[in-house]
Image (tube, rainbow, N blue to C red; front, side, top):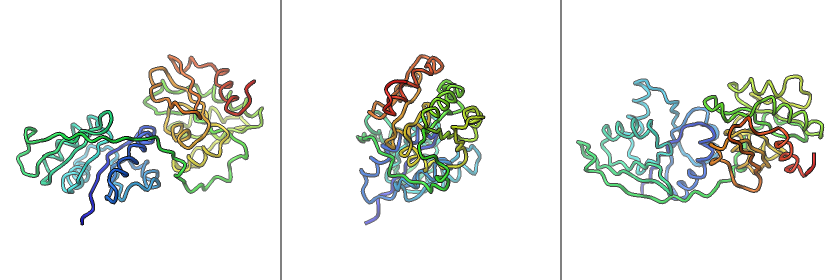
Length: 311
């Protein structure tokens, strides 16, 4: 008996990918014994591999050249007879560009699943051309996605010997396209200096694009360890679980931290607060503007997470 072939489409950003891991896990459980293929961006490949969910990972860095169309849409989506395609993006890129071109070019029946509340709506097309929407049927599939614990993911930990014995994980950056989510790095520096007075060092993480924020926290700060470039995404669950507390913005590493069981203090705007995790290990601080969150409120929340109810 041939294995069922399932394709999952999910690009970045990191936070969106992390929040989709529960859904990916539910899809894998729904199709036991199937062969799973993922289309994602290159910087997410290592993390995706370490989940153990996928037999094959295809890189799509969202280029728009003919060779990208040929490699992704023609050679993958159109030529391979996937039994189901779970489109976790379900945005203009996949629904307007991927799906119509793939359906036009394929000679196989296709079940393309658009993400909706509670599951997926699959548009099922026949194998024979010409393709017309009148010949499609729609099938709804419920997919229940319970929250996933990321502590099962482990990186190589090559620089873990540089980690202090007692530390807080400090996450001052966020997506370059969402500056409204960035609590001022000068305030993270103030938090780091205050933590140092309590005997707790700060391990400050971020990407090259967040180097200015990381440098602001670490510059002339004897209590901060600049960990930029010293860890992989897959190292973050272990780093978070070993930290006394994690302090950060609404960004991918923060979501990895709380999903790994770390005690967290996270800063959110009211607009973005729908993504704030309502779990016991997270204290969320919310304001109309991220800059409206006072340093003293963050200190109090961190102190409570550290078991020090008074400052």
